[in-house]
Image (cartoon, rainbow, N blue to C red; front, side, top):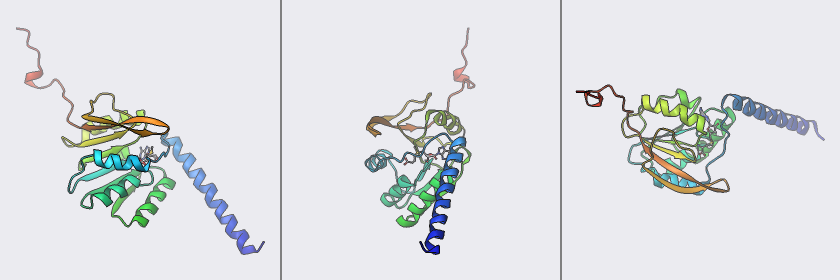
Length: 196
Ligand SMILES: C[S@@+](CC[C@H](N)C(=O)[O-])C[C@H]1O[C@@H](n2cnc3c(N)ncnc32)[C@H](O)[C@@H]1O
């Protein structure tokens, strides 16, 4: 085998090993696997999310950015922003954005650290423990009426406004929309119980 082919093979193998190592190490910190939403569900999400002109739309744990690029293609006036923690998956997302030629922002980092105060609509497809953590973050940061679209998993202390069944792995799961509002704490005059 010519030396140049041997060297190219060696570089390819090193790249493959590096990709696997980075992905495995990242999963130690973020125990949510990369499972992309099927294409037919992406279309349903975009119909369901009530996205409007100029909306700021987030995908937290954006994977390969398929929802963001599809959203931007369908609603060109929106600001589409994604956050992805795993560098190799983030790179996949950057490649998809590059080839789609859509103006989509994909941040490499932890979704729990990104300020969401300008969000109009947020999509999440994450595991229950992450949903619990995000619920508290949303209470602190989101503006009144922000729509949260969750695929497959729900929030413990919130009631969804609407739900539809969509395909998930080999069966079906709910796609839910929550319209976020500030949690009510008993510190206002009308919430105080009077005994006399
Ligand atoms: C189930 S996949 C969904 C991917 C994409 N949203 C989709 O629907 O096709 C979850 C993704 O979230 C990423 N993720 C999990 N926790 C995260 C966090 N705290 N910050 C950023 N990304 C995260 C994972 O790396 C994975 O790519």
